[in-house]
Length: 229
Image (spheres, rainbow, N blue to C red):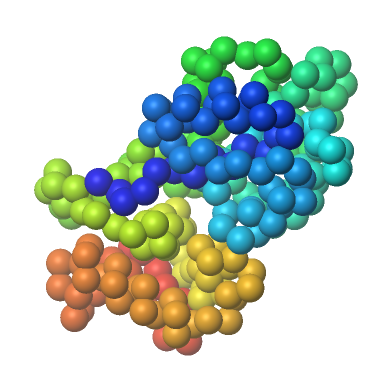
């Protein structure tokens, strides 16, 4: 199995929301990452982009609409708005500004989880990536975050999986060193190419049929890496 759970960042200043969503997300196979201000949430997105963001509109330090706009400047994953505001115009504005969905408080956990799964699927489809990718006997399930060879799970570290997912989602295209470093480690590491090479080597040892002649994580010299399309 993948070595870690999909990370869901919940940006909300209400402790009861985290107490409610934390166990629900954990039980559904996700990791609950908590932020109580817009500033903290935006820092977390830049530090390590989560698989999805749940964003409250009524934050103490910044209006949620402004936080949404700032997040969309560098984050391409799903963003679900969570708010007690029920005016139709605010929902429309949030969706037009880049939110993937809008859930009103109070809400049921079943509906919320269904919307989260749908947002994750839709984002993959919109990027052109298939939810399940198979090359030979290797299968990568981007929704379940599961990597298998001949149906046997392959254990990857969190960074190794995130690196693999970036390559698989860009199948057939060259993904540059900078794109990979920024997406997996954050903007502060965009020039750490040697660091990236170390992790690519580790990933190849686990997924390549023959790591000495890689056919899955293919090097584009001086530029980046490519997954077969």
